[in-house]
Image 1: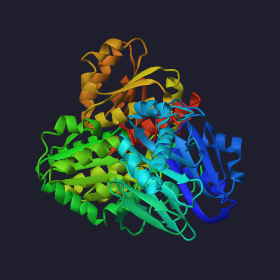
Image 2 (image 1 turned 180 degrees about the horizontal axis):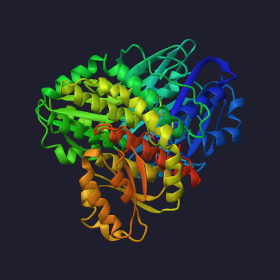
Image 3 (image 1 turned 180 degrees about the vertical axis):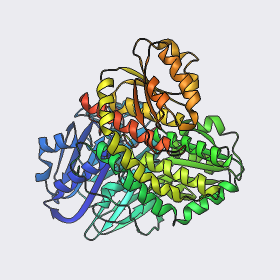
Length: 598
């Protein structure tokens, strides 16, 4: 959600503004509505430039690229407390202009603290929890005269999950705090940087130190100390090399990153297969699942849908039951059921999803079990907390709607299910070519379908059996990119109430495998006899094509690969309609790539 980056050099760097701007571009994939920077000179002078808008708009307004200094902070804010506005944009300064900082996360007692601070005479410009942190630091600094003690005392007054960065204006030191939200330190030759997002650091160095919960770090350009938030005691931790591939943010001829990342899926799937066949973690995961008392699976949004598909793979191929639920519901639904020897499979593209983190923490604190993390960002909180880490190797995904990461998550589960059963996974090598052929052959047909559906305000996406998770994911993509009401359902359930909303030409998208022909024909006819319009994704079948108003063939797809092709097709369809209707598919309104609040 929010994201910040701070950096300290030994001397003034005339490129500081450009460095901060590049970090802001890296942070932007998380989703945001305001942006701002603070730049500092050695004479204790500083400037803050911030406003509502995109990083490009705010950077152009204030000419970020022209700013210099020896240390600086950039923050992109996704509004939780306080509306998107210049006053609520970050970074913030205290009343005296002696402390500047920014945060990521959610301070749940913000309203009470704002009232308290105002009663103490603080001049708060907005209603943002990040600003409130800086003013509490101001109070605690006045009480203690020591910034380390002020950090520790401030932490005791804040309720929630957050990370923040702050710096005294007259010091070359910065301080970064972690309590629930992600935080990383990057060590380079001649400077040190800290960020709530690993990606923004990797442009500068691959020497990374993850900061853990209830820790903070004090750093200058050439020295750092990690300390406990509880007692201030020093914690020793050395940098580790992070090999995550951070590509340049380039469209490479595509119109949007979502389009680019859809078409990157085949190569990323090949990369995945190269890893899973050699990575010991996959063997360890299979062994852990075999020895588990019970198996639970959690995820949020797209990651949950990939996990649900995974439960079908394990059930169909191995007869193995996996209890799947939304990460946010895990504690309520299964919290009293878990026991020693259980396995929790946690799926998160970013590795920072708050609902997933809550569930993992609950599980680890209560039972002696195994957490398997299926994650894209190595070095993330989930990657650090999981007992076994399964990388999906999709590389960085810039667009907020997940595309290539979803396909690789599905690939992870198909591989695990087949390897668990002792089956050869060689056939999975055909999947990238299937995707490439599908995109090449069906793009023009999807463009025609997009033209048909572009003015619709409601649509149902129905899947039978193994296609049900893809129906949910397809409907989610339509919500994200098209801004319409879309609902993904199990096709058999449609007749139990929702069929009442079908009117002349009401659009219903059906997803089917070749094995489900008879059932899906029955469900299609239930809609057709009520004069609804039917659009079907399925392996080619003449009868299904004839009863559909529009048919997208999943050529050469077998039972286990049909969901992957249908998923790709719905991604591209949503993208095409969204663009046709003037939406920005890379930055949908109101949502974020990385959800770090409850």
